[in-house]
Length: 369
Image (cartoon, rainbow, N blue to C red; front, side, top):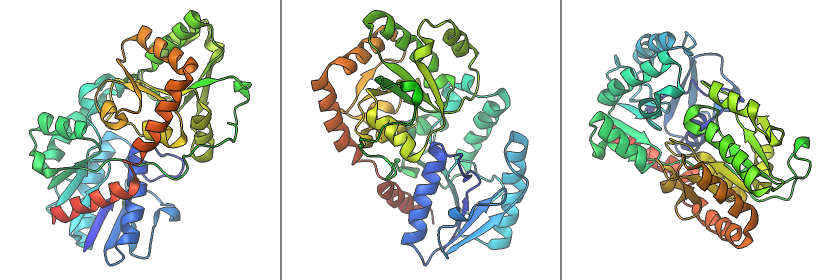
């Protein structure tokens, strides 16, 4: 068997949810199936760490595809040329993009449809491209893989796609996440307790609601907690920035930038709780990372988050600022509640592993041939 894989997003130091899914599932499949030939297709010089075994052939195809016009050129011209030259049995695309010109079986991993339901979170041209082409990718796909039952139902409904051709793969968490006594490397904390947010800073993550609920929490309950925000800024943050500038307690808000590995684990392990009350998530990997690190979770009643969290987190409506502030107070003061959530979170995390995700992805591949 010969599988061509779109690995264009595997770039050092640039990992978010889609990249971690790609990295963790592929490195397992390469190891578990040494008799299978994998061709990894990059759009720029690749890092050797992403060539997971002797059965991987790295291929670079230009142009670098980091803009809608270049996406189209790469998938509609470069990818078909590689397919013609290498004759794979299947094209696997972990970021969902397919080649409409290709004639071999193709699997699109569509993690969520946030661009349909939260279009304001993307630049106009990017959002238009996703909305226009992902419907066509769904029509073209032999099978679709996704990460939650919520996303599976959403894809089936939005694109009128046969549910029998959708596989729920799930996500996992790396071995970097576990309870630890090591102290986070943030001088701004000054040994104060803190709430933690992990994720990209864009409107669908409810960043403005997070700041509003934290401000109300501080005003109403007069506790010493800080708020640590981990993640890179993305799009349309002017409203958030305006509110932050006027906050009474903005000195207690710490923008920590991107954190990974042991740095991120220490932040989880010592946080009062993870604040993750997004408007929209296809999965929500930080929920499971927090569970693994022994961190209580406050998350949203919407989309995939109740499915992923199960009974191991506090669920709240993302628009309910007063309710979120009250939940933050309970997490800061109720030790019995915190202990219960930690225990339940440890059990819940066992349901989501990269081994299980890779096994399900392999089943999806076999169904496609």
